[in-house]
Image (cartoon, rainbow, N blue to C red; front, top):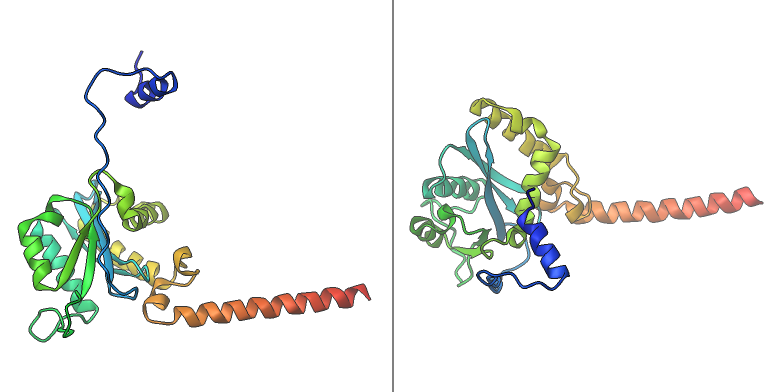
Length: 236
C-alpha cells in the first residue's frame, strides 16, 4: 500500500511522533518591498508558464496596481535574452523609453519601476541584472519555494488557463500567439476585474476607473432611493 509523504507527516504530527531525518528547513524571511509610489507603471510582476502541447513558454508582465496585462512573449527558450526582449517591448509600449532606447531620466534617485518575480534562473541571471540596472528597474524576488509571494502573477496565469482552456490544447505556436494577442485584448478591455472594483484593467490603467466606480456607486444609491419610494408608494 502506498501512502503519500504528506499523509505520513500529518498523522505523525497528530500523534506527536518524531520522525527520523533531516530537520525541516525554516522558511526565509520575506525581503522588504522597495519604496515606490502606488501608481501605474511603477510595479510590474512577471513570470512564465508552459504550454507543453505547443512546446512554448509564455512570459507575461502585469501591472500590480491596475492589473493591466502589459505584454507577453512566447518562446521555446528561457534565458536572459527573452527577458530583455520582453521588457524592451513592454517599456516601449508604455512610453517609458527615451530617444536613446534607455529609461527616461526622472532626475531623481527613484527607479522607473519595480520588476517583481520569483527566483528562476533567467530572473537572477547576471545579464538580466545588468539589463535591469541599465533600464533603472529595481528587481524584487519572492522567497524560494513560496509562490504565494508572487500571488498576483500566479493568479493571473490560473485565470488565463482556466477561463480560456483552449490555450492548453493548441499545438501550433503561431496559433497560440494569435490567441494570446486576442485574449490579451479581451482581458484588458472586456473582462471586469474584482481586485480593482469590477472595472476593466484598461479603464483602470488609463485613469477611467475612479470615475466609473463613482458613477456606479451614485447609480446604486439612486436606485436604492427609488426602490424605497416605490415600496412606500405601494403600501399606501
